[in-house]
Structure formats: structure tokens, C-alpha cells
Length: 417
Image (cartoon, rainbow, N blue to C red; front, side, top):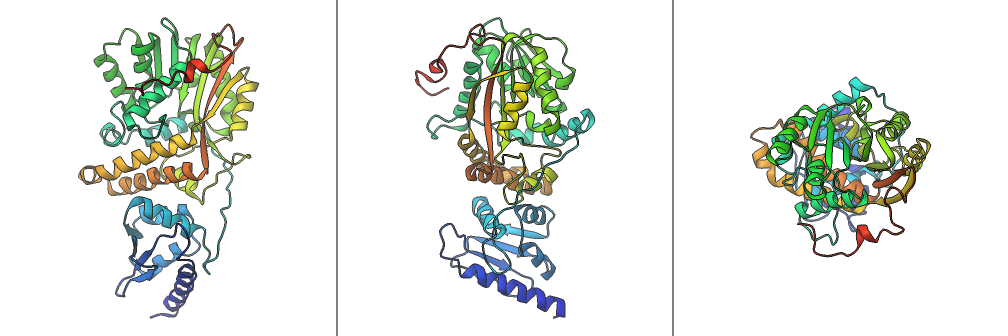
């Protein structure tokens, strides 16, 4: 064994000794490290996770790591892991908060600063959403709604909770027959189809994703709504056929960029009719300065999942929409709902892995395993949040808003179909 390898081994021993001293703590995940040509190193009893290292050099990934570096090592094949994905992520969290001597090391937020323009935004959207429609269909609900669901009890199926979310947005916007609805970032058309079928609106949905556009157009045609629902491949900044009575934006403003929030909300204001309502449903940072938090998991998402994504704190989003001329009339956090949603997605993804391995790139599957389970953890831990912000342009009474929110939440009758 070389001198460097001896030093690496001593560092690893010291690190594991520190972890073994804390093995009885609540939430600790027993694990084993499998090194080439040596017996497994076990921490705790009855290991739930096995971390396989291809060489002694791979030990560096375990010393003073972050969720980002651990995820990167897994995606790039420097390490492999065996066990339930929830246990794997819990172990990653513990390693990311432990220094080389096994002591607690708290998370440090990192600043966000991304470049945004039409070309980069389109490329980022297509990178994320154009993996393939079949890929997404394997773990989303039947309507392929790729955003936070809404659970009344937590016992709903994913299909029920996603229908509940679509209906919640329609009720908050007080949709009515004959209104024009613009859905910014329409995905596979779930909301515009639901709103047209159940609330009688005429809807336009826009997306930058080629594959979303093609399937959404097909689904609109199959639903018999081609005369009332239009799907476009279009940047929100290029929409010119306002005014719209109502505007929804679900899971889109994360792509806008902090410096472009003013342009984004001003554009929505320009497109909205007087006394119209807008609903912005988007993920936000838990840091008041809109910095990334969460043991480095945001860095992993930036590199592998959502290039150029930026999350504002809800206070920044509210300030920017107010400066654009809107009055905020309702704000609701759905953080716990998104934790449940991501848990559903992660479980479905894990169940679909045997089939996905036949068609998808192994690196893509590793990325999405970490991403979906990591997002469930991030929302559950409060590292990130998500808010529905309802705002009015003009007068709330003329917009049809009652004095209370009873029409949205009461009566709580049978769960959505």
C-alpha cells in the first residue's frame, strides 16, 4: 500500500469511528462501505445501505461531502449504492452534515447567479422536459401533471391529488364559461384541458418543450377540444394576443431567473385584462436572500436537472409582482403537499426502473433517482418551499372575488375524481 493510500485509509478510519460513536442517534442509517479486495467496513448493525467504491481514490467522496458531491459521484459512476432510495438519501444527508472527525457540520447556503436569455432558457427547458414523453409517463399520473399535487388528507392517490390541484387552481381563479385563460408553461396540457372541460373556458397553453407541445396537441384533439384549446410553442415574452381574463403559471417561474422576475410579472400584467386574476404556482427558496440551501442538493439540481434554474424567496416574488402592478390577494404554501407528491413520484420511478433500464441511459436514471427522492427530502426538511400566489390587476370586487375564501375550500365534499 502506498503512502497516499495509507493516509486515505487513516482518514477513512477516523471518519467512520466518529460516525460509529453516533450510530444510536435517531434517524441514523446503518451502512457498509465495500472497498476493492477488502472486507466491508460496517457502521452500525444490520446495514440498510451498501456504498461500493471502485478504488481507494473514491474515498475522497465520503470525506466532508455535500449532497451535491455525493450525487455527482453516484451519477458519474465513481461510487455505487445498494438499498432503498429513501435510506440512501437519509445516509447522504447524515454524511453531508458530518466532518472528517464525525462531528456535526451545519449546511452553508450558496448564492445563486445565473445567466438568462431566450436561447438559454429554451435550451434549459428542452434539456429537462424533452427526455421523452414515455419516460415521464412511466411515473407521473395518467394526466401527466408535472407539478405539486393537492392532498386533502394525504391518503389520496396521485391521480386524485393531481385532479384536486387542477380544480383548486380553477376555483382560485374563479374560472367561468366564456373566459379566456392563458397557461404559461402548460406542460402536457393537463390544466388547459381540465379547465376547458370542467369550467367552460377557452384556453391557450404555451411551452418551449417540443415533446410536450406534440403530446399536448394530440391530447387536446383526442379530448375533442381543438376548437377551444390551443397549444403553442412560444416564449411567454412573445405572447401578443392579450388581453386574457385569467392567467395561470404553474411550475414555470423557476426558469425565469431572479433578475428577470420584473420582466416576467410585467409581461403577465400586460397580457391580463383589467380586473383579471393571475395565479403563480412556483417553487421558492427558504432563504430570505434567495440563496440556495440544503446541503448542496441545489447545486446537484443545477448541474444535472434544471440548468439555469433560480428560486426566489416568496418575499421577493411578492415584491416583484406588486411592483408590476398586481395586488396580492392570497398566498398559500403547499410545501408539505410537494413532499408528498415527490414521494409518490419517487416510488413510481423506483417501481418503473426495471422497465426504464431497457430503454433509458443509465446515467439519466441515476440522475432522476437522486432528484426525485432528493426533492421529497428537500420539501420535507423545509430547504425549499412552494407557494400559490393569487393576484388581481385592478379591483378585487370587479374581478369577482368574494370577501372570504369559502368558495374555494368549502364545502369539503367528496374528494376529486
